[in-house]
Length: 165
Image (tube, rainbow, N blue to C red; front, side):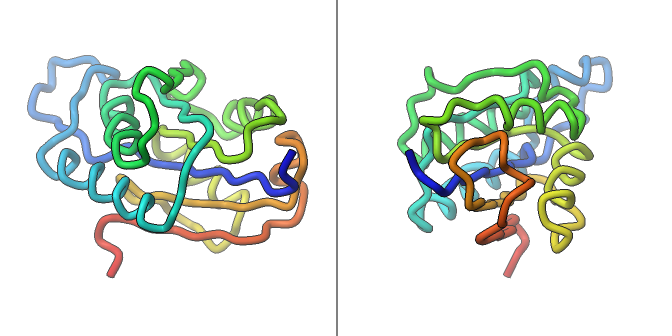
């Protein structure tokens, strides 16, 4: 069991508002989102990231973002887990999900929505105030158990997003 737990928060890529009759949960990615999600997944993979688990919101745009990241990280699409608590998401719900993760998992990605992900990222590190669309916030905690994440030493934090130089 690792003494480092890494949490990767991914805000879904830019969604389309072309069909205003679509329920929010069914909105797809727009063209920019379709470009950004694979690009950001590739950037994460280039940094040597791998994940033990990808949890996604059930919203169409989040699932597509999760699949694009999974593809670049060589993560099996069938292993993406959809969790209804990630839509629309609330910080305390997200923390419950994280704190109840299995101890054998060391690197977990949550794919979800604003404002919950931005608020959680800010709670975990005051350096992060906002997560733009398709942003990736990566946190490494000195912790043996997920229930300690957010309460123990934050070893590293990084924020990346499509328009970052």
